[in-house]
Length: 473
Image (cartoon, rainbow, N blue to C red):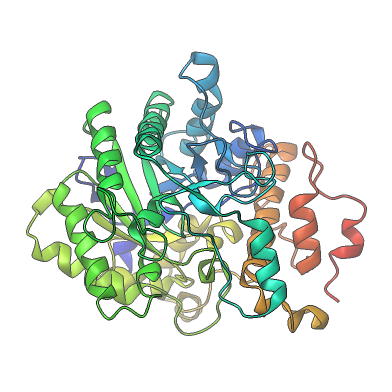
């Protein structure tokens, strides 16, 4: 039956097999020490929840290759060296992601560098010290109102254009990250080249104005190719390499050729014959639509592009060397998952927020497939996995937050960060998952989500003030 394709194994170009098409994609956990640190017991507990239920692949949140270019202050960062002591936390994380090992889950570490999007004060640098970027172009607001402009001006400094030495150092840092992943027992890595992060900044004409051998458009992929080549030369051939690309970023410049350009990049990456999968994602901090919730019929945000990408890859006739396409964004019902595969929109199904609401999603889907003949199951097949939180309930914020995309998106992100922290905390206290997945707090409002995300000290999840600010006014 068509529905069964979700649980059909598929082989990656490197020779490894993904046991089913369900991928828990990267989500920012905000669980590390403030100003960055290694994985800790909260990460282990959180990822153990997903490991229990047989996802085909699980990808970590972004692991920063530079400790001076953090995102929101509690990022996992690479160790200074590959000593046994420094690798141990990463080994524990890889083990947690695999669980018992009987389900064949592939553990993937996402490697990232924020570039110009590393924020002030919490980015790992001295206050108001500029971050590095391809060109000295600041992150700016697309809104015209002063409050949005003021927030962006404070949060993001004018970056320093990278020298060739800086670029060489970044390439080396990403290759080192892959070595950390391999030595720690991960099955592979994913390079974060989306959402306006550094590698995406080289690809984008709005952030790359260089005139040298890393210029746009002719050399937009050069740094990415150097990193991928470096990783391939220092890891075994069965080590998985994925790339997260930003489809939406190509379409925000009024460029009539943008669609062709992103397909050309897909084609070029595939022709390297070095990459195992490419995730289709979109949005950045200037227009962070990828972090906002949607209830529209356009649940598969990037499905049109991903279908074209699949077609382009097939036209290259690369055979088993052709990378798989991972589609992420809005796949909220079993029916959409099925359609995405059967309609050749993708090969792998990326699940983000639904994986937080339902860490046991593979188990639930398998149960529905086995019982799909019943009328009840047919109704469930087209029903969203879980309800999204309602974060638009405070009328006084409603007229302001939509004009500040970074904060409006941040509220949604904060709610899911708190939900992940709750899953981890309950797992630590109970030792297992089954009572944890029913514990999501839908009474948590926008102010409570932001407050609870930031006010968290050494595992203290719910401060007294939380009871006041969590109520949706």
